Image (cartoon, rainbow, N blue to C red; front, side, top):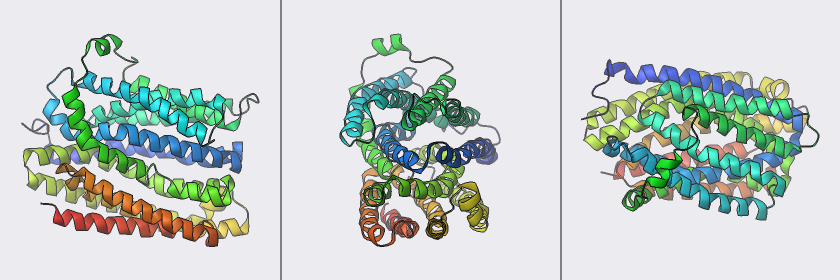
Length: 421
């Protein structure tokens, strides 16, 4: 029987949940929007740029190591929802991912010289709690606990911002440590709330046998998705690495500030759609209910478009204000270059979200490796364009690189979606 069959007012289930998710994400977006110019003001362009490079690596690694498991959980949850030990089996896998992942993350950050040795403990603790926090978020998704999801995300972001505000004037801590302490605390607070104040059911973990068959099944489906998530624009910043190698941390801070305001904020606002839609689509597909699958997909496209239109016009109309008054950039050339990125980044954010929505059908068929191949092609395309564009034009045309890449990926997904039966 469908997970949704027993829900009251099923026809308006999506809309009711979307409202809760949306207001929660709107509050979270306000925190994100407030933090970007303040972090630049408090710590300076260069320090913020260096932090962005290291934090980008952290996000890519988190997506790559946990993303596969989280997506596989959403895909197969309907098969295991009556297994009372299912969640503890998943947490056992998460704990092993952390053990191996923390070692690898430490080596990557230290060997690439993105951080100082003394900053590493804060990052590893942040990674520990982020592993279990993101996994707990998945179970709020599949159980349609919209309120808990929204509150936990707001608490996570706001607590991290508050901690950074409180410690920003402590001279014995450098900017890098202050920012990562904020990230660490944010995941701790978020996890403690979403897990009802308990860290880990150690006794159950120790008494639970590692389920090799479940691990293998989830791994086969999820690994391609994990690679896809690590490379997706939501976490990936291949252009940041190229930009940093050519123009340095200040340029990274300037471009990333605009990118985060436009691309990532719209992504956050559209997250409610993905949050409620993804588990529903997987359940409908697994049940063979393609009529509901298509209806839900079409609704999602409409809602995504209705959300984007006002956001696009607001961003376009207030572009100068965002750059000079909100982000505080004063240099005329910097303002000119950054202004060129606004519209293409905004359009890119919408096209990426459409592509991700459409590819859910491909993922539902179990052929997740195909979307990963397409993402690798798209990211290679983006990297090549960035290496060509940045040395000549700086970051002025990086917005168009993002736009062309998103269109390219969208067309690849459309083509593949028609070919998949």
